[in-house]
Image (cartoon, rainbow, N blue to C red; front, side):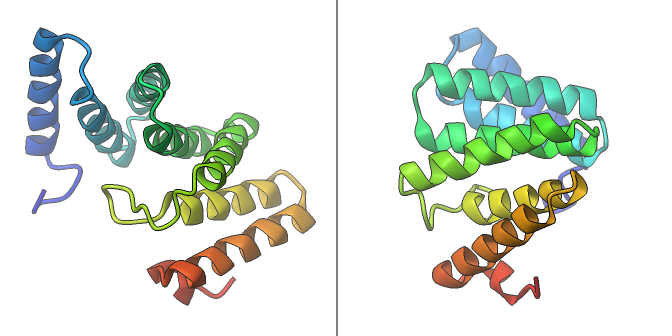
Length: 161
């Protein structure tokens, strides 16, 4: 990881971990592997692979009934769908991220990548609302993101929205 998320070695390590998990069957250890692979392909711009991995991650998180992982999987899949232009579907995933985040009191639970899922969800929901022609909703979500970031003393609180 010292060379970044897109280093070929990162992809190779996650791919090998996925193979090993496959030998064990469907285990909770597969979740961070799928998340790592999804991020690897997303950052590389290989969005179809990132989407497929995001869908697998969400499916597994739902089968395991883990609300924290479901929140993260929705956010990751929404992020990828945003970048491929599937704005309504991406927005739905971010709205689910926000709803589950709030309902399960996941505040201050940072993702393994160092940011809060609620702040991220509100920010992308704001951007999507704006792009889809809903400026009032965009402003509301942006304000919610900023307020949550301030409440958590999150680095995003320094953003000027």
